[in-house]
Length: 164
Ligand code: ADP
Image (cartoon, rainbow, N blue to C red):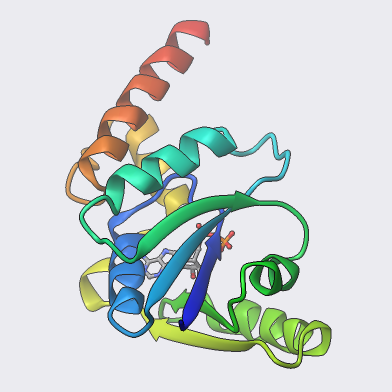
């Protein structure tokens, strides 16, 4: 079976992530969305929350699974028998970082290939960080994220406002 890993922070999962995952699911027999489990105080959602939101967002696509992982992405890929990593590329924002990471991963795991899918035009401007900022400032983010994410974001921001 051809398995691909789509790794990321997914804090939270957006329609841009969904687009990449769904397109990868058309290319590989199985796609594992791999959510980084690392302590980072800048993340809005916990690892379990990020996993659950991604899981709810891809519930309609049978060959996509969501798991969390820690440590090197290439080691996680090796553990689950995946030889391909998938990443999304937006204009300008992503290329250099992805290229650098790909070269390092190639050094660490020469048998692992990277497949980059170009972000679709309508999702080029969506990033998790920008939409958190827009949501925080009261902007409408409903069309930019899957419904469970929109609900979770609103609840989280409401809760954090109460503690400010
Ligand atoms: P990371 O910290 O690994 O970049 P992200 O959750 O920000 O984690 O992104 C995970 C992957 O999804 C990356 O390959 C990123 O380039 C890609 N991505 C993020 N937003 C979009 C988008 N709007 N369209 C397509 N790909 C995206």
